[in-house]
Length: 242
Image (cartoon, rainbow, N blue to C red; front, side, top):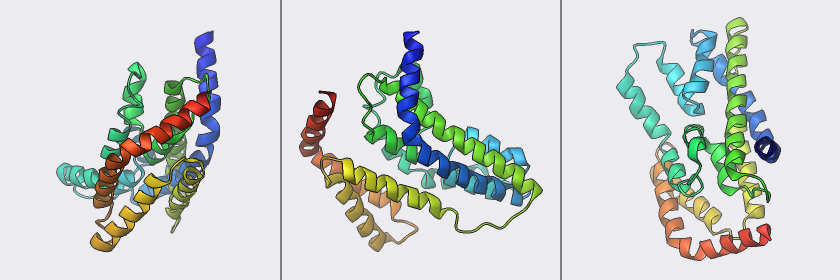
């Protein structure tokens, strides 16, 4: 009974934080499903990809490659480059995922940009199991994406529509997440590092090649600043637990 109560408390803590992302995921998932159907793929293909791949941009790319002569190696290399940022997410989550036991494989599999943002920076209420909290954040986000892709696949197979500009919805969502983190974090050093590194990489490498250099620079700077940042965040965590 206590175990069920632990899950319930974790779900209640995760749901409000996931709700804005879920709304965005359903909306963009519908776009992904409709795009897949517009390429002649069966409606269930977007559902299958949302479960097996669970990577927004990756699914758009795979969908565009499936109608023609499929080249697994090229697809693998392209997806690796596009999703390479997850390598940095994984390094950041080594400590939070420590000791998660059976929950760990799913947390690793379901770690997308938005789930990472919540699970890494959220302040879990006292008495709430952090492992179950992270599981429910990931599960709610993925479930909404699966629902959106399924609806889009069905609608797209029935009513073909040309929808443009919807991908900006996720850009807006990231801006909101960044602003929320800016308002709550005890030090702005990491956020400023991200802004400066991204701007510098964009100027040097252009829009198509700035992401990986920017992340490498962010990782290097934040690692160098870790001795100064860790006491600040550690002190805040102790205050919240008190």
